[in-house]
Image (cartoon, rainbow over all chains, first blue to last red; front, side, top):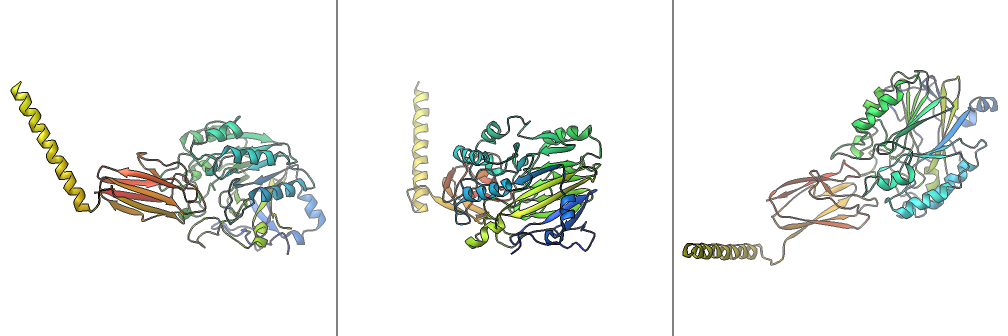
Length: 319
Length: 116
């Protein structure tokens, strides 16, 4: 079976009202190219070598997410093993990624030994650096104090920060703290004010990549899959020609395009979760052992300067 | 002096009456132990969502999910540590009132304890 899934967008590649169009579920990934803020998707098998080469950019990085080190329930009793498979997949890339983004839930229960195991394993990554944002599982009991000491030393506030790489502006946000009863993910006033200032000096032509654990757009509020003040954050990014939002939390890939903004969620390296509304709750999905790795994976992102485009590739751990 | 002694005796009498009344109340409840009630945490929800108990009841939450949850009252009166699978948290409600609470990890999960 192919490692990739084909998404036919009937030529224009856009569904401005909805999302889920570029949703890769059954054991695979999607290859998507963002050009001038418009998403186009390709079937990898149909792409010739010239096309593949032209999509190779000057900046490539990988996103991994939701490693849940410490989880040992039937949905996956070997989360270290599947994390190592993800690392193997990244280390086998023809061009090593400049850096790796981990979009949270490094640990399952915020235990020191879980963070230790994650750090130790990620040391074998062939990449320049690993950037982190916390998931709700990383800030249990201590409001993220331990996470900040280990993974957020150079960050501001609860762990947010930004950096520039080859003309692309990257912003890491924290939306898993101070959650309100009945609410969704939360950024908070202080972080929003910082974000507004952070992007103020940038030219509108600067490509922006925002990453955070919980989706910044409302995927499925009944399961808490969204961020209450996410729209406020995105309003500061409206003037930019190319914005890519990378999230985790929902343990499956989903993509939506709205204007110049492409939203994308990554697979977990630990266990899959059900599609919205297809189960009584978003708890870990137990699948036959031989299917598990096809539902876990990594996300690669390529930036091509001048073409104003970011190409996003999801690949599963199977095969 | 005499007045003070009488005051003390009256206070003692009131206290005794109180103990008797309390004792009768307990006997009527049919048990000498403080009452207990359970809330199940399952499928990312609290069951029952609203639980009504008498003052003095100890409520115990048990997490039956594969993922950790917490039990935190909206006004922070009580706050559990993170509960992994099969872990429990108990709190004794003494004063009548309505106590809304939620899971601080998954804030869409809400419930409430009514004490009356």
